[in-house]
Length: 376
Ligand SMILES: [Zn+2]
Image (cartoon, rainbow, N blue to C red):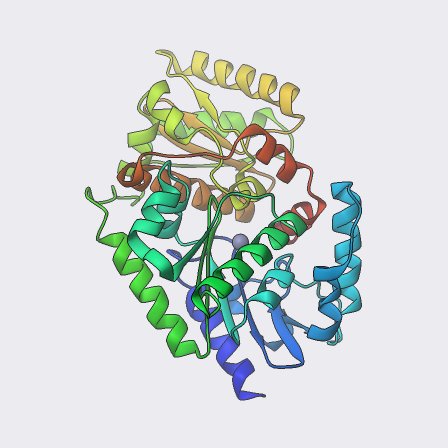
């Protein structure tokens, strides 16, 4: 195997295996030479990726995405872009290239490692994301305000990279995306590691209060019974619960829950949906379970699907999915939301996605594809 591809696989696995950088199936990596780009396939997991988890595309053919005028209709446009990506594929197999392929293509360095680190997102999902990012990283950082993912985000990043490059005489190696994550670009894998280590260190220095523990504490037997009763009340419903110091901080009452009641990033929506359900504490267990069932039914009525995250006042969090694997993913992603919310207080407090941004993701076919892959 080509040395560069071996290094790409190694760096992908390294960051993919580290939960503080990559949660569930998120993040993507690439290597490019003059002619081709190798990028993670959509739905592949970085942690266990091998040669077959990458798609190789022609860089010449990818150029069309920059220059072509696409449909004004967003669904139509994304379908057209997808077809152009598919036409640029050089490798065999059925893999679909990451939706962020065009973005990797325009970043002018051989290696690109895109992740959603908890520390970075504590800054990126905060009210002071832009000023604090530029304050900490100065001219080294290119900050991109939240933009709907896909083609629109690609065009935005393309414009901003061009602006940065003409201003500083070199392409940016550090691109921060508000309510999303970070792209690190470099000539070598060693340089990727150096940049990431410096980024984490600089943000960490700004964190005042240490993060609360997310080590699970046991539920009381009455809560466990309630989860079992909930499990039998709905179809395709697998609930698993968790309680920790961190979870308790956000579940202790309805106002603490407001700091973790919706999504920070598109990935949060992919795994947990955008809105989380608070179940108030009621003296009698039987009444609480009935209240929970009523609230879940009302949620189902409004959104058309079951809630994925239930926050039980004073008790903990329950993740709901069709199977255990997906439920564990929900729990992991929601716990990460709690961490980001807690740490964002160092940067002016949490800033969630707004309704329009959430709707765009909910309607996005590409994300539905990823969700399907995550379940399998
Ligand atoms: Zn991303």
